Length: 209
Image (tube, rainbow, N blue to C red; front, side, top):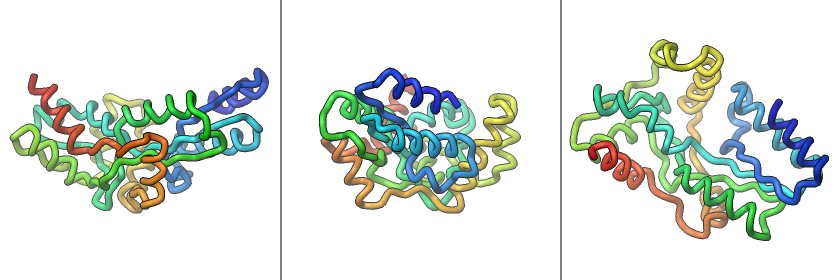
């Protein structure tokens, strides 16, 4: 609702540039409320006539900050992203892409996937943290009921419901980038996107310190 209001106000005030942060392959999970809202905003922008750019990032590397205690204290990687793989992306790359879309010419009317160079599974994420920390880290698995129960003290019920739908899609379909989508990311960044392994190495070093 707020996003649609923002599009309406941008149109009313004749905004010179609009950059919308959507979701990679957002149509894959239209049943999840936060995915559905992105679809509605994308459509409104395209019909508005505003000079706009749509950025579609994959799951953020930095989401793993929420898992710090689980990883360090219990040796468990808890995000139930499944066994197919996600082309996760660094939030710093998203920020840089947004700046370029807002400040450079040539991006109006375009949609860019924002993805990382490697598709990683839940087990891959656990293994990277284990390697970087020098201690065992196991993937907690794909049991969404158990994940929902563990999140109940920390997230409102609507968020648990919403994210569980997203994770179910990740487990059933994955969210891997195609070669053309990776090329879109390189185009808007002007370079290769950051690797998950490098993010984990940086994060583990910071946590150890």
